[in-house]
Structures are given as structure tokens and as C-alpha cells.
Amino acid sequence: MSSIPSWPLHSSLRSQGRDAEAAREQAHTFNVPEFRPASQAAGPAPGNDAAWVLQDPASEQLRQMLEQVASSDAGVLFLGDAGADKEMAARYLHGMSGRRNGPFVSVNCGALAEGMIQAELFGHVQGAFSGAFDNLPGRLEEAHLGTLFLDEVEDLPLHMQSKLVRVLQERTLSRMGSQQRIAVDVRVVAASSKSLEQAVASRKFREDLYYLLGVVRLPVLPLRQRPADIIALAEHFIHTCCQRMHYAPVQLNVQAKEKLLGHDWPGNSRELENVIQRSLLLSRGLHIGAQDLSLTEAPAQLAPLAEAWPAEHQQAKALADVDLDETLESLCDIHDTGLEQHVLNALLLKVWQRNRYNQVHTAKQLGISRSVVRARLLRLGEILPSSGTQGVADKEDPPLIMRPGSTERSSAAGTALG
Image (tube, rainbow, N blue to C red; front, side, top):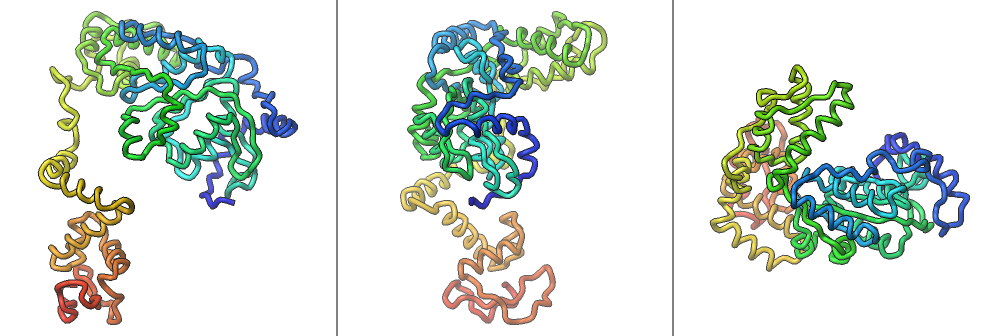
């Protein structure tokens, strides 16, 4: 049994799968599951419609491509910035496909709890880990006869990528804690806001999974490059928010539309929806004016990404531009494995030496606690556990016995600078 941390809420959040499990366990191992929860059996789940509110020519071209590939089960990979309507495109693809009456299951891979990713995607059996009180299906089984949308797929760990490759190739899976194979019929659609080609080149993403998911690769442009979509999406968000909040219909006036069109929308559609929701809450009457729209001042041109970074990121980039980049390149050539730990160890020792072997000052410069510094130095064999007293002031390091020959300092100097 795998030692996985307890997550008692996992079962309660997914209680609907219990009824499905009772029927599925009566079927043969390789039979396609015939039972689906009532919410799925009656028709498409909420959000499975083929609504398409985008009006920009670039979005129209994307819509035509989606309709062209909808009839197949080929993998489709959406590439674009976070919040740039990739899920809307995936839902439209599902709604136009032969799987439209099946479920559309969306999973944000970046939001999955570490240690529970396998159980979330593949399901688990009773006793698979502490807190697994039931046999529950995973997202892949929930999407049976439908579509599974994997957003931020680049965040899947490599060992999970390997399991997903097997599911895509064999169309069967095993729940966590079980060797029994269960057949699944699901179309997997994915999205990424990062370059998967670079992730493959740096061995952070499996090449075979990249080709399985990206039979068709469709770019989704950021909202600032789709100006005709801004007002269309804003009016769509107004309509849905008014329905949800039981408001009377509200409209944008001319000044509000001009203000929306003048913004760069770095947060894409998510930012736009946030602005619309806030304006509905704060505005009065049946019109939203420019004064009701709380927007940050948009620059005339989008600043390069580095200019928008926090100060510490800019400092790191400045260092990299000088000689750190060359050093890291050399380290990458030398070390095939364990590079991160090697760099951390070397950094610790260099800062320790420059601070005249004072652990308190070393910890302050590194931004970590002195206990961490001490533990790492002990692990590296640079110091030995003290055999003397521990009644030393907090501002000083306790007396240390230096490892012979480990540093330039003699053991006699340990009391003042240790």
C-alpha cells in the first residue's frame, strides 16, 4: 500500500461516485461501465453547451478549426495565456462532437493537491491510503463517453504523465491501490500556457505524451489581440452575472465600452469577468458607465514581461545577464543529476565563508533560519556536534568542533566566529 498523506475530505467531496461504483463493480473487469450518475444520464452536464460568444476574426478562425476536428477523437492541445478562453474553446469542441451528450470534466492540473493527483485522476479503492473509506472513480472515469479537459497540463508530474500515456494508448486504467484494469472511453483535450516544446527539451514533459495530446495544436490569442471579443465577452458576462445575482438586465454605455477597449487586459477574460462583476455590484441603475469600471491604468504599449516582474526578479535577471548565466551553463554541462542540491550546497558554503563562518549572519543573508544553516553544515560534514555547553546567547553561534581540514579556520577560533 502506498504511503500517501490522509485527505478525509476526498470521499465526501466525491460522494456521487459511490452510486456509480455499486453498479460498476457488478460488471466484468473489461466491460465498459454502463452506469452513470443521474446528473449525467439525463443529458449534457451544465456547461456542456456549444455556446460561442466570441466575434473577433481570429476567434472565428479558431471556431472553424474546432468544428473541423470535432468529429474525431484526435488529441487537441490549446496553447495560450492563462485566462485566454481556452476552456471555452474546449467546451465548444465537446459540444460540437459526437460526445456532446456525455460529460465534460474539467481539471486544473496546477490545482491538484500534491500526493493526491493519482487518486484524483485515476480514482482509488478502499484502503488505498489513510482516509480512503470508499471505492471512488477518478476524473478519467467520470469523463467516460465524454471529454476530459486538462488545463495547465504542464504541471502534471512526470510519473503521472507516464500513467496518462498508458491510458491514452490502452484505453484502460487501474485505480490507486488496485491492479484491476477498467476500460474507459474518453477524449482527452489539454491546454498549456507554457511552451511544451521547451518542457520536452528540458525533460520536464514526456515527448510521447506531447504528441498524443497535441495531434492538433491550436493557439488561443490573448484578449488584447482580439479587440472584437472584448465587448462581446463583457456583455456575455453581464448577462450571466445578472442572471446569477437576480439583477435586472444592465447595459454598457458608450463611454464604458471605450474604456474597456482601451485596456490591455493582462489577465485576459478572467480579468474582464472580474471587472464586470465588480461594476455590477458597485453601479446603480440599468447602465454601467466608465466611472463604474475599476481598471488599472493601461500603458500605451505592453511592457516586456521582465519589466512587469517584481524587483527581486529583476535583480535575479540582472545577475544572470552578467556571469551567473555562464556559471549555470557550466554546471549543467558538468552535472547530469543532483544539480539543484549541488548549487544549494555550494551557495551555502560560499556565503558561510564570506560571513567569516558566522551562522547567524549566513542565515540572514540567505533568508533562512540558523537552525537550517546548522543542519545543512552538519549534513555536509563542515561542522561537528558541539560537546560543550549550550548556554550561548541567541545572537551568537554555539561553540563548534570543526571538521579537520574542512575550512581555513582552526578549531581554536570556533567560539567567537562559529
